Amino acid sequence: MITQNRRIETKTALLNWHKLVQRLNAAQPTIERKRLVKGEEVTYYTKKKLIPGNLEATGVRLILDYAAAYHKAIKVPVVAMAITEEGTLPSLSMNCVTLASRRTLSDRAIRSHLNVLKSAEVGLVTGYKFHGTYANFELWISPEILWNAHETAPPTAEEPPAETTHIAHPARFIKNNLPLNVSCRTQDTLKDKISSVDKGEAMPQPGLLREAAGNTCDTTGNIGPQLAPVSGEKATDSPVAGQAACVATTGGAAAPKKALAPRFEEMIIQFWVYAHKMLYPESTFSPEQHKMAKNAIYTGIYRGFKNAQMTAKDWETYHEELMERIDIAAAYFRKNPDKYPPAPFPLFGLGSGYFDFENERGFKKTHEWLVNRDVWKLQYQVENALRQARTEWTQYKKGKAPKRLQAKSPLELFRFHEAKIKPLGKDALNRFYAQHAIPQNQNV
Image (cartoon, rainbow, N blue to C red; front, top):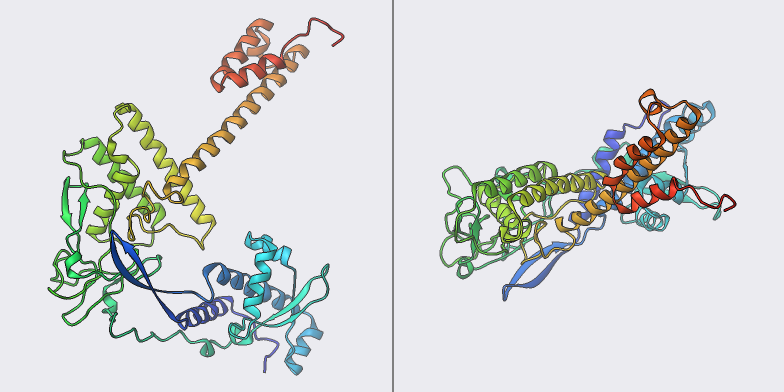
């Protein structure tokens, strides 16, 4: 029986919901997929989530809103008595438009989310009353989620297929927030090379995940979760001969034949250190993965520094622009916590890495964002400069302009504003001339 004094602990309720999501997603069947990587067929496994991150966030929003409505309702004696004596819980009055605005989604997407959350398979929303198109609906959240933590215990680990996967030692997992995939490669394919920006020479592709003899395949993905080397084990040790080992596939051009200029190496390192901190704050990379990331930056972002038309000053300007684009990308992922950048280096062929030049939806997209931002910034500066010129000219005619401006002649004041607007471009200057033009025909 629910008592009047039983409040909803939001932290506990959200934890229960998260555990339920984990259990339901883990219960989904594993799907085997195949794809060609450099002419070789690669097998990997994936799961279609019943509750993806965006849907889980809608559930979080409903739990928080319901808890606020519940705590407000139990302050009313009649409602508190009904809860105590009859166990009747108050409802949350809501509509799709309001909920969509709180989730920055469309109301159509919210309706789809509610249909899943009301389903018997999920059961987060246990009660729902529709009161017409132009009225709020009522809903109730499952008491098991709100209070009974033992009924939503965390999921147990599924037994992986014995013929393709194995359970790695949990102490060797590295924490990150990137999704898990599987890529099985045979010993014959370990001839792939990765470029080393640090040393300017090709390094053998490491076996990132491996276990003792007898295992035929490992779970890999875009660095998450990955295995760190066990104490005493070298990261570049080859897997046991004749066995299959899972390695992260790489892409990009080969290492430069000549060593990079010190300043170019410094640019790559500075870019990656900052990108790692801003875009992958919760991810840990092995030394080999750091090299793979810097190689992807060398080939995909700086294009091998092969543009002969760019001077040293041009490269410095471009580097500063790239650092700004990292800030823009980081701001985007902060505003969209359900989204995250893919691995910095390619895992399934060229174009799958975030920094690949061929990835049109990767870091390359931030150039368009930067241009749009600069356009709006320039428009704001032009409008502000023209408005200031109009205001100060009006004040000058009334004798109320600042002393330094009032002491100028009309022509000097005109030239003063002209010099300020001229750097903003020809269009801004033409608008300034039109704004201060004196028509010869006063009847116009």
